[in-house]
Length: 434
Image (cartoon, rainbow, N blue to C red; front, side, top):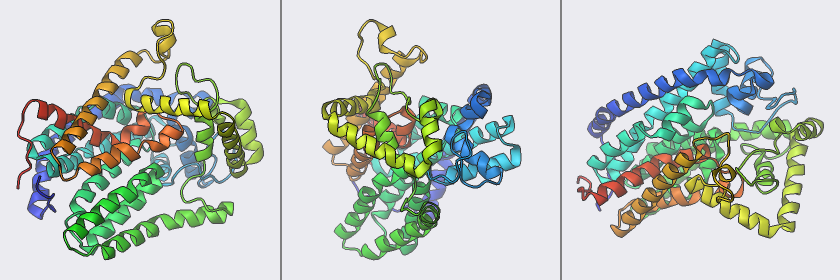
């Protein structure tokens, strides 16, 4: 396989032109589904909790003048429960269109749909630089029509679609940076990493691998790489540091982005999980946990959950190992429990589409891994990038709580590999243009 090329201005125009129709179709499909699903966000239960959950609470606090605070139902003060990018974005929507209004729901879901539709562009670019233009066209259309991308964009007010767009851009930028030592390009790389980290810190799990790959490629080509890497690191720190400083000044503790990791570890490894990976131990779904959170405050509550998690893991290593394995299987198949007494015992009765979901999710995952194996067999130049993405990003969810929308930020790469696997099986010429 030829080395990936740094797109010229004319090539960028070609990318935009070829990706334009998939983007427009993707956006139209997602907005059409928004029209049917946005009323589900308007349920006033528990002070509009279903609107956007913790993000909605923080955004409403910002829009009401209380600052970045109050992630649950009581006014508990400043929070570091999540990164700041999406809550501030949603707060801006609230300020213009009203807190928890129907207009705000439509606008927020439309923004998510736009982010999801625009992901067609890095999908096209990444697939083109890796597998050729024909596969790139197929991949862009596959993303435009991808059922999970449509559903998550049109149903959930969350940072998922923005994170997906940013991660896809970072993966595509990594491929291009493997051939350029231009400082400006590396600074842009660092700026996007900083934005992604403040949107969803799980994206940072890919940073050492993608950054390392780009530096290794430059070194192998005999080009200087240290200056670009330093420029990218400085740019990323400049983006992320103000938030870390805010957290330290507010909580007198180093919190780079968010503070609830151990809470999620505790929940994921403790409690009844026979049917489905549920969230029984968080304040919004447990009155006892809500009272404990309000009594201790966020920082002490997080510390208490860390102690409880460590104690539980130490006392029940076998259970934790089994739960970790179940999370790995669930992350790639959507299947949580084996049949024990018919479908009623295997699937959550509140999730009637579980059987179809398991079949589709498993099929997509299998195709993606077949595509990855094919890429290694063909010694595709960027094969390790895809291996890093699939291998590293889900690890944090193996340890905590997996759900399909948590994995969604790497679905574009999964779709590309699945398309590559199908195209290879049909004997399509996959060699990239040189």
